[in-house]
Length: 154
Image (cartoon, rainbow, N blue to C red):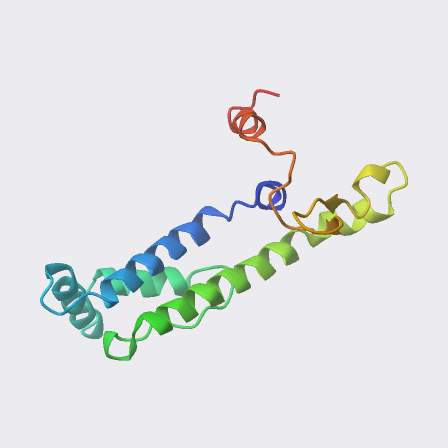
């Protein structure tokens, strides 16, 4: 969670679910004659028969996320707008879940007298004055700083 609060990187499970939903959106908009679309239709048929399939696995992934997500509808009730809606819900709910998860560290920082630089830390904006943003990629996290963090060279 702390990685997200500083770098704006979502947890791996959320990123994988988002990637799969974006791929599903791509497959849904393909014409029926395309092989990938036919494979999606077959995966949906297998899922309806309770047989392992890609769409069944995606439904399990969405169900097993640590927060509530709507269930994946069948292909007959799925279009690009519905996929976009699922992606929006995933981003919104995961962001709230992350915020709830790091709240235990954010609140004490605001009251500790010895941490004045972290009190209501403001992020610079392209237009206007700096704003308090609890969860975002911090402006001081440059590519060099991020790679140093990843390889623990600090």
